[in-house]
Image 1 (cartoon, one colour):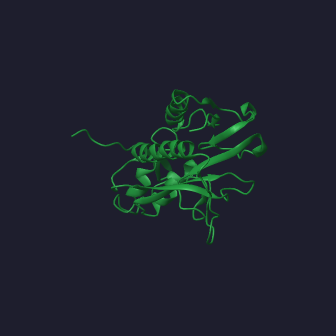
Image 2 (cartoon, rainbow, N blue to C red):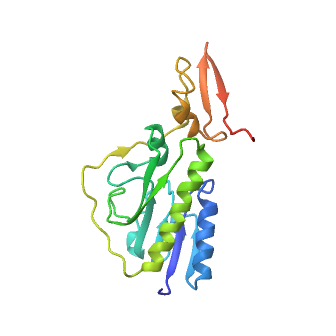
Image 3 (cartoon, rainbow, N blue to C red):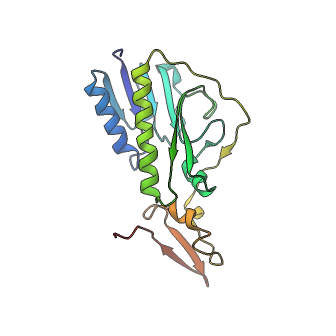
Length: 214
């Protein structure tokens, strides 16, 4: 394994992925790499590998590092864009492919290096969904660095599809549908940032969901 200068960029200080990014950063340090976790695009320096994890803003200075790697929870080119994990759970999927690929100027369009499948059981709520996917983010990043430079990307093939950015309004429940019919929507709602809600007689009500301790 070659010594490398590695940077991990998470540009949202409230992101759920930060604890996993810290774990990844410590792993690289423990394995004798120069590694740094940063939270601003302006902090990115010249180096070998930049991991872009759950970034809210597109990073443009791709010339600074030999590899600019994005990890995205979809089987690219299907599911480019925003919140792929959430959208696929809403579609009823219990198997999701996570892709590690090279960033290019066109969003989520670069060559794919590694992929790994995540399997859900259908009962997981948002923290559990994120935990399972984030652990795969970490494992794919570690695998790339272990294999480097003996890694080869492949171009994305097939028709691309895109997900739009979600907003708190997307957490609205339909009072005329059953809980069963809307369970996947409840699963992907964030109790603090964008909780489930419904409106009845002009009044907005908020619902929060958690698993009972048995």
